[in-house]
Length: 266
Image (cartoon, rainbow, N blue to C red; front, side, top):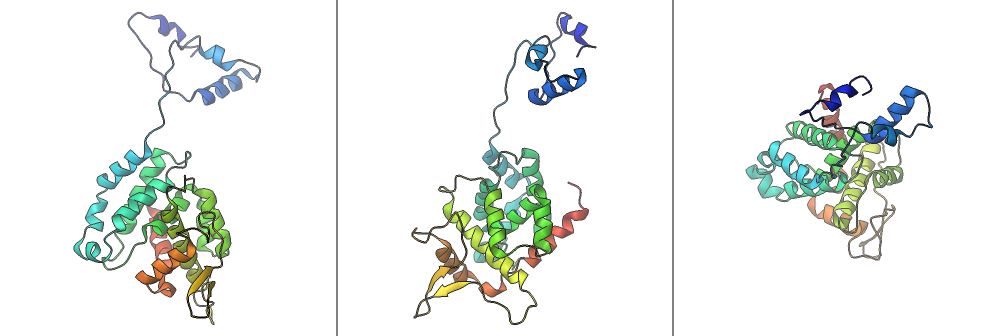
């Protein structure tokens, strides 16, 4: 700026600067070698008017990318629409939930959608997707790659993975409770089956039943679930069991699809 400041006074020329003011202030202090410099005062020598761009509406971005990458083309295939009619809606709902994290930028949201679209191309029409599990694992790949690697290498217990997922999901979860509780139970069961794949005897998923065989407790903790509430881990488990054979929900095929994306630079 010092080198071009004489241009700032040329009549008829207006400079529009798009900057991160905090980082630019740090750069000024670094350039002059002093933390005592009042960077804001220094920058006022060059900047007459300031305007802060409002936070982008991420829900609009999610809606736009869902259309742009034509996810409807996948979710609206006749067989899928007949057998898994709500997958597209669940995909958008969960995408909105996990992208609320303020550090998950628009660029990362676009990467999430582009990787998801490529991965879905390897999914057979008759296979259920489980959008929450699918998107959460891609989210880890983008945002927390060390966690993703450790999941692939089976480094966590089921409870440890639940805790990590809940730390990463920034959400006003009272509004998304059912979405998040379903996600946690899908994550827990699919990881349990992946963790003990090939182990004999295979430990069953940790639940408790009453004398009549009714499930009364899932022995994992989630901040999104309270046993006293209407929708909890038991409710989610029962719903999932009504849809599929729980012992067949394995994370490995999803991880394999995502790992195939390593050679793609998006």
